[in-house]
Amino acid sequence: MVSLSHFLAVLLSASVFFFFLQKWRRSNSPKPRGKLPPSPAKLPLIGNLHQLGSAPHRSLQSLSRRYGPLMLLHFGKVPVLIASSAEAAREIMKKQDLIFSNRPQLSIANRLFYNNRDVAFAPYGELWRKNRSICVLHLLSSKRVQSYRCVREEETSLMVDKIRRLGASSKPVNLSDVMASLTNDVISRVALGRKYGLGSEFRKTFAEFGVLLGVLPLWEYIPCLSWTRRFDGLDKRVERVAKEIDKFLESVLQEHRVRERREDDGGELDFVDILLDFQRENASLAPIEDDTIKAIVLNMFGAGTDTTFTALEWAMAELIRNPEAMKTLQNEVREVAGSKDEIYEQDLEKMPYLKAVMKESLRLHSPIPLLVPHELTQDTRVLGYDVASGTRVMINVWAISRDPSLWKYPEEFRPERFLESSIDFRGLHFELTPFGAGRRGCPGITFAVAVDELALAKLVHKFDFRLPNRPKMKELDVSESSGSTIHKKCPLIVVAAPHVF
Image (cartoon, rainbow, N blue to C red; front, side, top):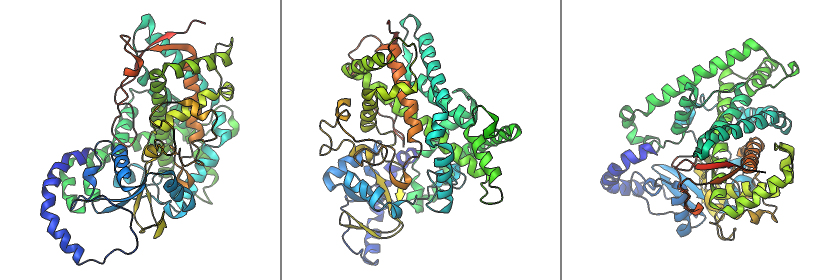
């Protein structure tokens, strides 16, 4: 979005010069056939880019209320289908999942993920199928996720100890920083084998990596502006970050090769261990290259830190804003814990309200509100409209989760709505798909939710929270950051008083 803000004012004024050119091109180009989805009026050259604003999920929701649950927009020269209803999402991610399973080739993601040798951004095809199979069967299976239970329990207990130290004498605690450290430490141990703290060079580089993934370069949508690449500095930033990430990951791979750990060695195997074992065992049959291992690890690290932390941060923010929900959850967790000093993962199955809180928070605050874009591979019809092959597709799961035709009191935090409902977020109910669904659904749901639920249970078990200077809880700032992943704009600062049992 940085590039968009830099150039949009100039483009708006320049667009008038292209108006007559566009009219001439239209008069000399073939007319589209069929019934197209409704479209807002677009400007020459930039199309509908000016209508995205700093919060595209909100802008697109507003447009969908006027033009319907299926809209055709143009980002420069790129046609983009916007789906904003559960019915449209079901068509795309279930009924016609196969032909919507491709990914558009995004230049920044392509360079950061080793020519898209990952799972999230790779085009649909044999490489993607092989990589996803590796993730589902070897990295994120139920058995494998369960094997990392001790890591999650240890790190969440360390989080509690850290809050106690930071909050001594009723000092305010930056809970956002603490939770970010938690998710970083968990995924560092699980994916890389040891912790890399938030102050490390890798963490700083990875933070910029995440920022770059959210950049919308205008030259990608408006080819005639490709000359601006020489001046905006974006290519140099991407090149630098890609080199630094690669240097770090290469050192991790070499460190693991020296150890040569195997499944039967005992102890924890991390993702790099597992991928290197797979590489050795399949060297003569279906070899997996080092760049592919690095790309997959980057996917796992990104999903296991940023989006997992975001979901946890929003859940805590909503609980603090809603004291009655907080009290209900604390009572449930403390009753299940009884006289035990610790909460363990097996205890979570006895906490239906905890699970309802996570569902409700994910409903209100999808970490990636527009998901990763899809791309259509053949002409088709969706909800009675004709859509052409090559059209980019964005699913506004944030808008769907707040659709008043699907949800009663959609803007309010009411976990109770899920206590008597079978609706879940694992890709079967299209009114709630914060992790996507179908072939392109996130394979790491079980891992992410395990971290968030355990952390949330331990936080409300051990502490009573209030805001510094005792303002009303409803006054907590819940404004959003910009970017592809939506964080709280302001960190969550609280006073965490140890609960006296």
